[in-house]
Image (cartoon, rainbow, N blue to C red; front, side, top):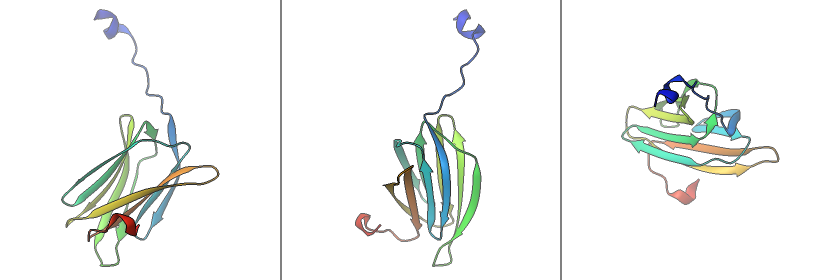
Length: 121
C-alpha cells in the first residue's frame, strides 16, 4: 500500500482522438481516428453519448431546432471518456449512427423534440 502512495500516477493514454467536429442544424458529427465503444444515457431534457477511451477538446454551443427549440450541447473530457451532452428545457430525443470515411470513423448525432423511429435516421 505504501508503494502505491509513493508511485507517481500514470497519465491516461487514449487510444482515440477527435479529429473533426461538425455542427449540423439538428446535431453534431465527431470524426475519430479509430472506432470506439459508445454508451448512451438519456433522461428528461438530456441526451448523452460517452465515447470510451477517447480524448477531445472541450467545447460547447447551441442548436436551434426547426421547431424553435434551443438545445445546448457540450463536449467534455470525463476521465477516459469523452462526453457529448445535449440539454433542452423539454424532453429531447437523440439518435446516432456511424459512418466510415477513407481516413476516419465518425459518429453523427441527431437531436429532436419528438421521438423518431430508429429507421428514419
